Length: 124
Image (cartoon, one colour):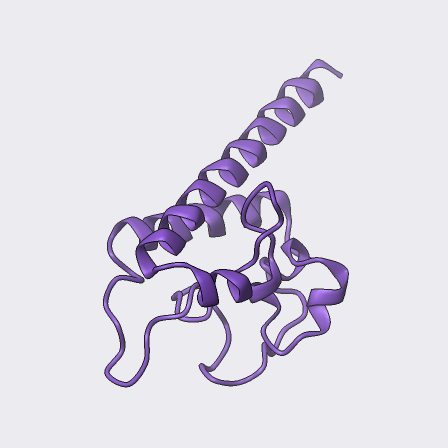
């Protein structure tokens, strides 16, 4: 099971990948898929997610974890919209913007939790 530190590290690396153009360039025969085409994904491309302990797995809702590509079911905004929805309704640019905001929000939450934990564990 991934720790909060694992999650924070992974989300920071994902943000770095995104900001360095990781999802802008299409593959020769298809567009890039968010999370699935990230260097962080342990998936061997085009196969079902092989490891249930993946960091992204616990960000997906319970029902979404049983799907072939669980990361497509992670809610990315306040309305609960997911990648599987955005792929049919948004441009690649819009998806990257939503992903960036989602990453920044989750990184900030994990950093606050880590700061809170470190402050309270040293006080004990």
